Image (cartoon, rainbow, N blue to C red; front, top):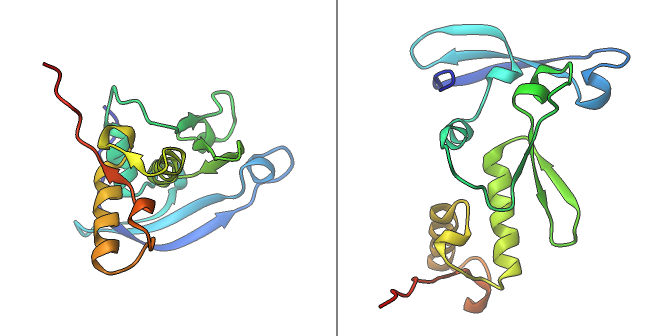
Length: 164
């Protein structure tokens, strides 16, 4: 079920280095956030493991969904709480290299770009992680005269044919 998500604004971020064989050497510094929540509460020193963009919170709450081209990466036995509980997200780029993202949403966007490239733009909504994001953005770009010069470079929205 997980903890509820509360909307707020980050007002300050502090980084705390660790020494020797610690998070600083492998994962970077610990981040502590000062947050002013929309309900009027203010908290200081909120550990990074508890701070998420709203999009990621909601995407992580969806159960029984297979992410396309995105792999969660956690270090179950790490002493680092963020790496152990939240982790990171990985995709494989078109050149076969692994690319790491700290947010699920950004990993999904990049994975969708890779899927569109691999399929030469001939994708349907079910091929993508964020179809509403991809198709709405492309329509907006075309309306504004941005994006690719050739319509063939844009993702195509396909309908699935009905079987009789």
